[in-house]
Image (tube, rainbow, N blue to C red; front, side, top):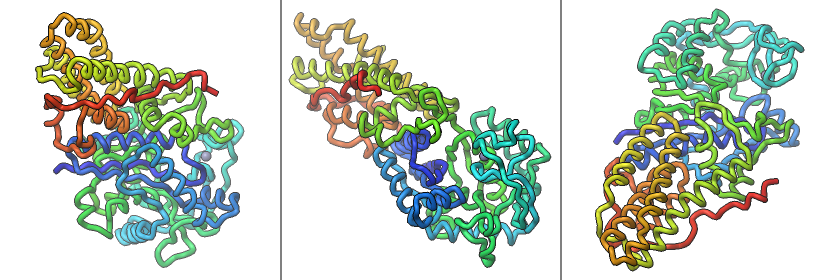
Length: 512
Ligand SMILES: [Zn+2]
């Protein structure tokens, strides 16, 4: 069985999860559910980054010990992800004991290979970025452009990773067909960064005087392992590096690292160099997605537009949120979350378009076919259209073009609604054209079956509810027959269950 290992970035626990964090995690969940349905052996890893000065500072402000604070915040992340129906296999916390072991062993291994050496570093450092900046990157006021704060002058002795040694190999890999950094514009950007003379060996530890909350360098407690080796190694810990060789060989290398576009450099340059040094295979694909703004503005605590995914899900349901986020914006570009657009879109597509198709079809099947799936063949044009949609949806999901996949599914729903309007099965039955009437209803039922399977990765609850109302006893998530079931037909004689609307219209006056 083919495996599929997908990871997300791990978020800092210095603040509660917001809609931007949720966006990436849902994308990974869509892929995980999709590939499980295809019969792949999926491992979906997500988690949180609990180390670093930002987290330590947040704990201090909350009047808590760092570990106590991390325990609390990590719980909040997991609660949020449960509400959004994320089906991850493992939730990693960088304070996990097994992760600490992995990071220290990896550090030692890189050092033993001669790729980590001690040096003196002097530069300007932004706490928000947790990185050294260059003078030329500062804004007119001498501030970090992302954090609007003055960076600190910094000189200290710490460890460096010898990136220069791997530049040629990285260039080869980034230019070869073996590496897929996407979107393509990012791959070119990374290649350019690699040629930049200023991209030099990077520092992989801090002295305890500048960083206290982190994993100590082995045998050298005065040095703390700095963000990159600690955070990036989570992808190895998650699948049992150094602890579970069977799991590791089963899933590594990752099929996809899903990340925000702002950390592409670290994933497409630092991470593969570390893996090269450790003698491990490189990830198959790295995808840097766009960001979500809220009502046209960057998500920011100071602006106060941090949309809480839990509130949203409690009010509107996980499916509505999942559906909107991925139908409204191409995944590789920036998108916006506007409450009015959200309500308009889910009402139009989920309540009206899809909800009505299911409702009217089931009501007619009850009235004219005794509540049973008629033993007829589906109408050919629509059947072909739905075959095409399945193929197109596969193609779009595999290339992470989620909005296009959803668009194709809903175009089919539209077409089927139009088909019912044109064919008027109720009139056919009244004219005693039973065969024709049954053919129309069977066609609509078959399309609904197909639609629920295609929609399942995006809106798992809604798709399962359609599946249930179509009369199935098995659950969608237990299907894993590869492509085969997609081409079967809804079984003749199956008793449908007409349980009313699957999605309740949202009253648009409730926008605050
Ligand atoms: Zn900064």
